[in-house]
Length: 146
Image (tube, helix red, strand yellow):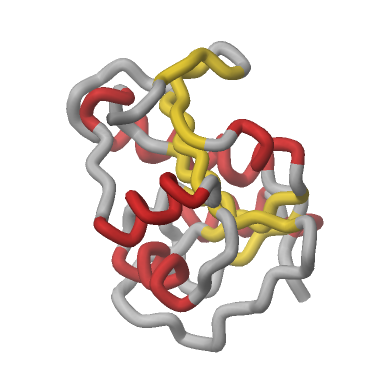
């Protein structure tokens, strides 16, 4: 059972304290991590939709706290066993800024922009040339990890 609440105008569930931490946003397309997952410093949290296989693999590679931005309504968010454990441990916050029952291209693009906007630093380890993540990489280049 999840306790849902409204946070900054969005449906949410999990640990809202995570929103106060510094955020390392990850946006990626593809299947495999092309490089090692960076270790988070104390006081930092992962921020992502954790939608692509590559983004999901970051959660599997680390036990660090995470904020997931879903591209669907809160009642439609599915969580893996590992994400349920993070939720129970207070290491996960799920933000649901959309009301749609299914992910749409528009929601996915808006979610990725929200991640890029809210991240203190941004890691985009894989993006298709000319694709939407490549465009975000250019737009938010001042936030990119070296």
